[in-house]
Length: 158
Image 1 (cartoon, rainbow, N blue to C red):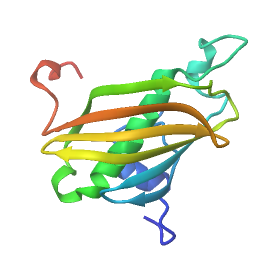
Image 2: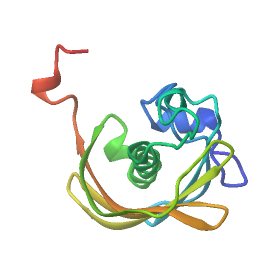
Image 3: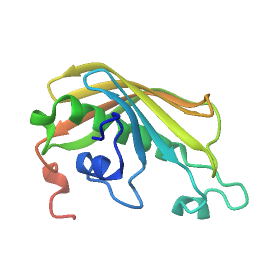
């Protein structure tokens, strides 16, 4: 982490297993381990999903906004418990109270703010919101489950 408290892309990739085209966090603007995180995603027309969502009216899919928020949340969890979560595999366990408020389009800068609500054993629950220019785009509660590796039913598929 840089001295001014920001993460750059190398820092982000040290926390996340995701890579292009599925790495959806460009920068961490602030982080208070065990409490909150603010991440940034620059949304450009070069994103592969804009080819089909939707031609002539490109909108970032809501599930990918939620994924960007979840990736930001993983960084918060791992920064909060580095020793315990370094080699853990993270899966979505649930989403609650999801609301889409405005579309996210090419040229937008998506700011994702997550606050830790609860951490018990391998479950992390966070309240999140994603904004563009100070305007609410998405809000949700995200629940993640940490495990020691790929679930048995997924092994051998990679």
